[in-house]
Image (cartoon, rainbow, N blue to C red; front, side, top):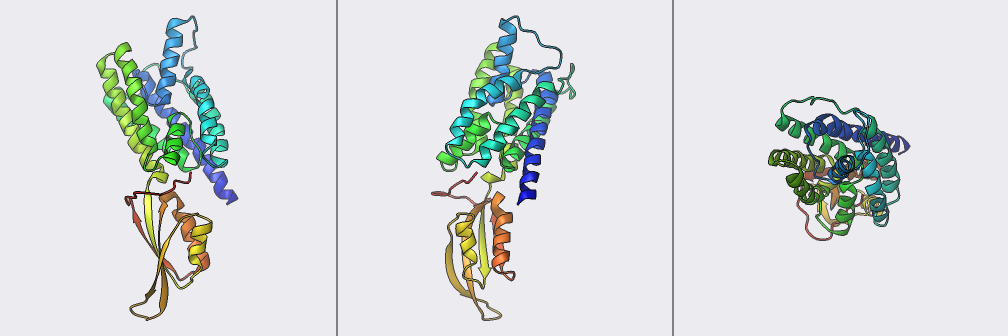
Length: 288
């Protein structure tokens, strides 16, 4: 468990680096906006530089600093609904992301010359980085924090959906301050970002598990450790004629490795049938 925690911590930092590379190197040189709170921070930076005497050295990005300021009240809000480990990792991630975003140099000329290509590549890369941070138990802050809060409070509300809602306000500014092409390409980037984030963030992927075991206590680990409910019934092997216990539960994809370990410890001969991407309506608790 300690090694897994270390791996998750390192993974969340790598996700932050992946996100910043997509923003600073792929998106910003084209003048595009992220339809998230990162985009809001971009707008604040643009307004500050335009309407004040503040000047920044070439390649230095203030977006991360403004994003950190926005994240402080959001972190307090998320602290109230999630377990302690999430905010601690997120605080470290946000500070790390701020430093990396400020000092990864922004190219003077776009690395990818075609704006559409940059929108697609940047969206996929940034979404993967943000989703991987969430998958490892942390967050880069911004709309991720709002999304996590909403996914806890409201059933079937995904983190990516929050991104699309915030983007409406960002694009409103884009229409006023820039031309329509910038808004269109920014929208393409944000849409791919939201889709890629939801795919990488396995918390949003629900899986049903059908467990066949000879141990009547195997399900106790599911109830106590995963804190998931289960439906059980009695069965009999068609070939052996032996009595068996059948348990059915629904978990997030992120919980699959732990479920396997729990069942294996209780009954090494048990087997599990997984059905991914199932639709769930009603009281399904998202444990983040």
